[in-house]
Amino acid sequence: MRALARFYDRVTDACGALAAVLVFGVTALIVADVLLRNMLRAPLGYSVELSEYTMLYLTALTAPWLLKRGEHVRIDLLLHRVPAIVGWLCELFCDLIGLALSMLMTYYGVRVAIASIESGTKLVKQFTIPEWWILLALPLMFALLVIGFILRLHACWTGPRRPRVEGAQI
Image (cartoon, rainbow, N blue to C red):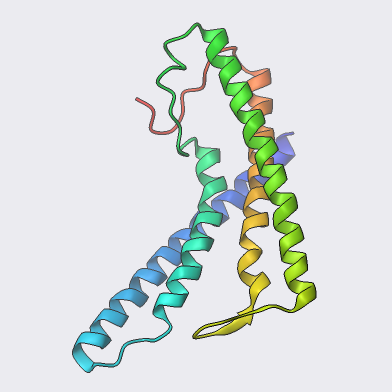
């Protein structure tokens, strides 16, 4: 399990770093587009489309990274008001739901991407690209989330029988 955790840490840290680079890049692209549009009346026609694709990949890259860091969306007001064992059971139950849904989404994401590859579907806007280039982000993200939830379940099961203290929790 430690080897898996080390692998997951490296991959999710790389995902977080790549996401930061993408945020910087898309921000620079939007600024350049606004400047060119207003100063030279020559907008970058592809900036909106690149921003759309970048947003999807940003979500796919940061979701596993945020889960690992415990900074995902989490409403745990009740968890610390109930007995510790009840809070722990809620943690376990929610991680099991997260694992099951991530596995399901990985499965269907792979099926959709494979169908897109087999059909040769292309997205035609400013760029013409294979549809699967965009679809691939989702099964990759959910596969990483599967690993993340497995690690969370392991930590929950082998750790103290109380709710976690995570991320931005107050």
